[in-house]
Structure formats: C-alpha cells, structure tokens
View (tube, rainbow, N blue to C red):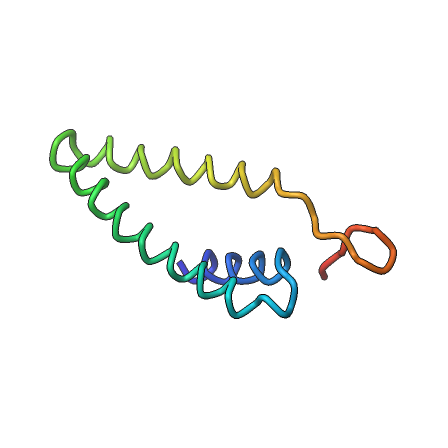
Length: 88
C-alpha cells in the first residue's frame, strides 16, 4: 500500500503543472476515498455471494487493467525543448 500511494503521488506531480498541484492532489485523494469505499462494497458483495476466489480475482483483473492504463500514458513534455521529461 505504501509503495502504491507513493507512486500515485509521484505520477500526479509529473502529470500536472506546479501551479495545479494542490487541486490535483485534492482530486486524487477524493477519487481514492470514493474508490476505496465503493471497492469495499463490491468486493464484500462478491466475496459473500461467490466466495473469496471471485472477489480476489476481480481485484487482480482491475489491478492489471489499471497498470496497463498507466503504461499507456504519454510522458510529460518539457515546454523548453519539446523533449520528454526524464526523471531519475
């Protein structure tokens, strides 16, 4: 969980300009909170109705789908030279 939170924050900081960091982190926290709430309900219902294998399978599929979406993101471009910004 700690690694995932750190990666989310880093990606968010890279995708938005410095002047929008406050709003971006607020939106990220809100979406995370709503997503955590809804996913708890969905996984709970799936676990109760169909068993833990289905519930954990559902979370695995969504995790892989999320990772694939992140991999498709374009790297932010530098305004100065139009080159992709590299991060250490």
